[in-house]
Image 1 (cartoon, rainbow, N blue to C red):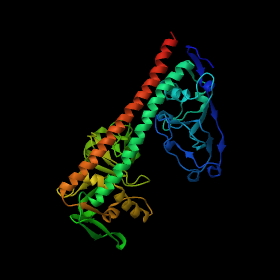
Image 2 (cartoon, rainbow, N blue to C red; image 1 turned 90 degrees about the horizontal axis):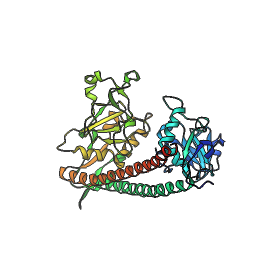
Image 3 (tube, rainbow, N blue to C red; image 1 turned 120 degrees about the horizontal axis):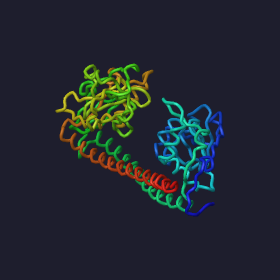
Image 4 (spheres, one colour; image 1 turned 60 degrees about the vertical axis):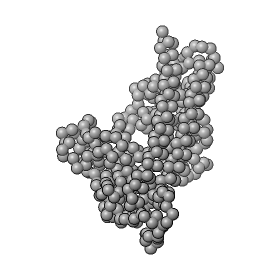
Length: 413
C-alpha cells in the first residue's frame, strides 16, 4: 500500500467496484432491513432511517456492512451513505465496495462527497427530469488522490466532525421529543390549573379540560382557505413561486429553493392565493396530509396550490394565530384529522370534514401567550441546534474540498 507523500491519479474502478446482487422478491430476503432513496439525507454519510422488505416489491439489491449506497437517481442530491449492517436497497442505488490498495476504504465516500466528483459525474449523467448516473459512466472517471498518510489525516479530521454531527443530531432528536411532550401537555392541561371539568367529546365520550377553557368546532373559530388548482401549462421557467406540498418541510418551514413558477404578468390574477408572513399552511391531501408550516419570513410573491390550505383565526382577540399554529400541528389535532380521513375513501381534508373537528383552548389570551412563549423558546433551541448542525456539515464539506482540490492544483504543476 503506497504510503509516501506523492499524489496519484486513479480511475474510479481502481478504488471501488460495483456490486449487483439482485433479489427479485424482497420478502424472501434474509433480512429485515431495507434502505430506499427516501431513507438517505443529502450529504449525510449515515443511514438514520430504514424500512422493511415486507413493505416493498420489485427487484432490489443486496448489500453488506461496509458497502457504499449511492443514489444514482437524482444523484445530484448527493445521497450516499456507508452501510453498518447487511440488508437490501432500492434498485435506484448503486451498491459500491471500496477496494483497498491505492485508497483507504473509508476515504472513498469522502472522495464521492467532493465537488471534484460531483463536477465530473455531472458531465456523464443522463436525463433532465430525473438525472441518473450509471456505473459504466463513473467507473472510468479519473481522480487525483493524496497519499495514504494524508488520507489518514483527512479521515482523522472528518471523524471528529462526524462525531460532533452525530452528537448534535441526537440532541436535536431529544429536544424534538421534549417539545412534542410539552406541547401535547400544554394543549390539554394548560399552565398551573387545579380545577378541571368534563366536556362531551367524540363517540359519546368525555374529556377533562381546565375549568377556564372552552370547547369549539373548527368551523366556528377557524377560517380554512383552499389554494388554486394551477395547471401544468401554467408553469414557466422563471416568475412567481407556487407553494405546493413539497415546499412544506418536515420541521414546519417553507422551502422555496426548488418550486414551480407561474408567469410574472399574472400577479393580480391570483391575489386571493398570495401567501404572507405569519400565515399557517397545511398539506390537506395525500400521504403527507397534516404536514403544517408557519410562514416566519416574508416569502415574496408566492401563491398556494390547491393541495395546500391556509388557516386563520376568525377572531384574533379570542384565538391567537401562533397558538392556532401549535394547535394545528399537534399530534392531538392531527389524530382527529386522520380519524376523519380514515372514514373517507379519499385522503382529503375538505371544508365538510374540517367543520366536524372539535378542539379545546384557553379562553384567556394571556394563557395562550404563555403557552406560545414556552413552545417558542423550545422552537428557538431547535433552530439554533439545526443551525449548528448545518455549520458542522458545511465545515466537513469545506475540509473535504480543500484537502482534495487544493492539493490537486499543486500536484499538476
